[in-house]
Length: 314
Ligand SMILES: Nc1ncnc2c1ncn2[C@@H]1O[C@H](COP(=O)(O)OP(=O)(O)OP(=O)(O)O)[C@@H](O)[C@H]1O
Image 1 (cartoon, rainbow, N blue to C red):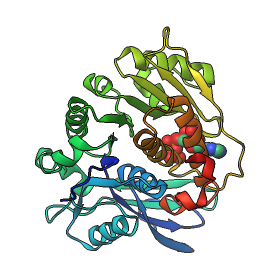
Image 2 (cartoon, rainbow, N blue to C red):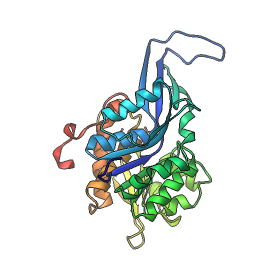
Image 3 (cartoon, rainbow, N blue to C red):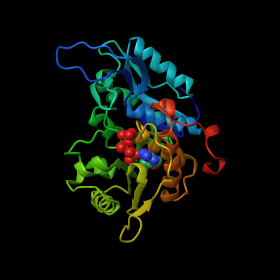
Image 4 (cartoon, rainbow, N blue to C red):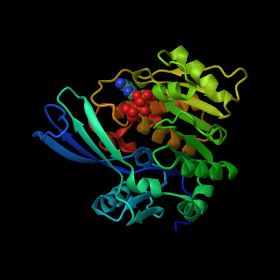
């Protein structure tokens, strides 16, 4: 195991995206010709980890893949990005998580996700990773693995004074209340905020109100991302916890897939490297990083590295 503590540990998912582009989506029982196929690296946990690593964070991924081609391939992807694979487990009991995606010429898609090995990441894997997890600067979790595993990781980090970022995605309506209490930063998008609070989130003001509700549930701070409108930031430490809107700079948008994960990976980097920076400033910078990711096609392929970003972001 690596001796030096990690900046960012991510406990989460890896998925292989199998993408076919076709003129239209096939009907049940139908076979059609597509015009392009490609394989991409995805999964919210891995995406966030790779973005943090590309910013220059010393990162480790705690996840599970299958003993199969896609699993081997994903481990190599982590290595290529400088992410520690000390805690990437391989299982013969399930296949590497996969998302079969069909995109039609209108940009609409049909997706089947098989979480596979991701769902086998459990308590034993966390026990192995505990020394890394409990000495990291920042832990990041989502909900593409078993929620019990995510919650256990967040609790362990919280008990060891490791800063936690929880991204409740994909959202589940009856989230265990302990998720809020174990989150230093609870970071979600508009639709997740809506599902969790039961209130519509259409405007910046709505997002502020949803953020207040999430704060009341016990997290230390909340960020709700709002696509091209940036995000709102709220902190329980401020008296009356006002919400601050952090806008983005306008950019030419090509593909927003994975923008939320780019934002969270960047945020994790800032929390680890600039622990005294205000959350608003971190969000402003994370907006800029995610704003770069939407200008190129793909998920991880669109994530910028430190060398691609303005020096004033560091
Ligand atoms: N069109 C855009 N222009 C500039 N920045 C954007 C745009 N879309 C997204 N972003 C940046 O990415 C962040 C996350 O976007 P968003 O709120 O859409 O997350 P998300 O819904 O989780 O994204 P996705 O599901 O596509 O990964 C935003 O807060 C913003 O910083």
